[in-house]
Image (cartoon, rainbow, N blue to C red; front, top):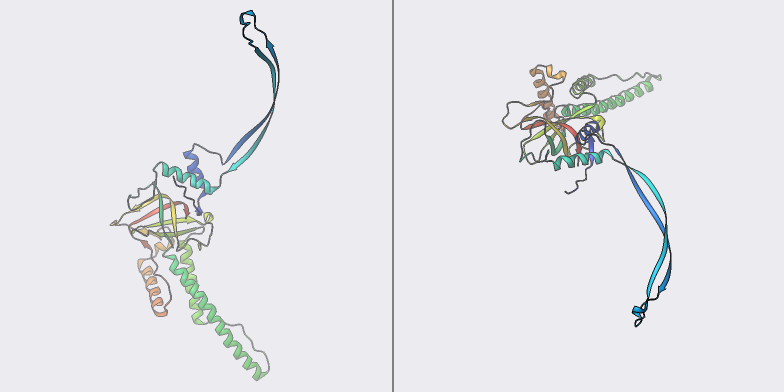
Length: 313
């Protein structure tokens, strides 16, 4: 079997160790390797003697010789011990190789139909949560706009104060106050932050993986503690493989969809409010030309939900 060297960028070590220990009926993370070397020295002492034959063989001079000897062997042994430690990456490779050899890992979603509970390796491009990503981008844009407007107001107020000081000869500086537009920006930013925090619970992130040769998408919730890069800059909008277990499968034509807001408080909003919020963002994009995707709360079939064990190249 060809060795597939993996670079994990996400690895749930607790689940990996549990599964591997179950498969191997318990295992040790450290193997002791013992080697022994034996050196020997031999010495041999011998003596020889000739025996004359009797008259029976008088016509031939036939000599028979015998040798008596004693050999001594002295030896010394040397034993060395070393520890071979498994890394989590090597254990991942070990478990994955076992699943492949036993035919338990589905690697082609085109040829096979994912079954709930089966192990799957799903390749595709990782995208951020299509609902929260739109609001987080708008938040960043509003922060930049707020800073830019604050700087402009300070310059204006400074110029005005300098003029007044020059005229009256006394200081009249006042702390800059927020404009009406800045207050609106701040209110919108605070609301968007509340929405995104409610949808993306602390310590977790939801991503959507787009398969390149089919219409399938996979919805995965990862724990930030197991990410190599918690900002997810390393993985977003790049192609990786997701290794885990299928938790839900909605084939094409299914009447259901994966609701990204199902476990959030935002899900309790009337559909009219979410629709109005989406429409407002579309209008802002159309009027300002901002590069903001339309927020999506549903991922439509065909789609699968995966409980991830690892994300790797």
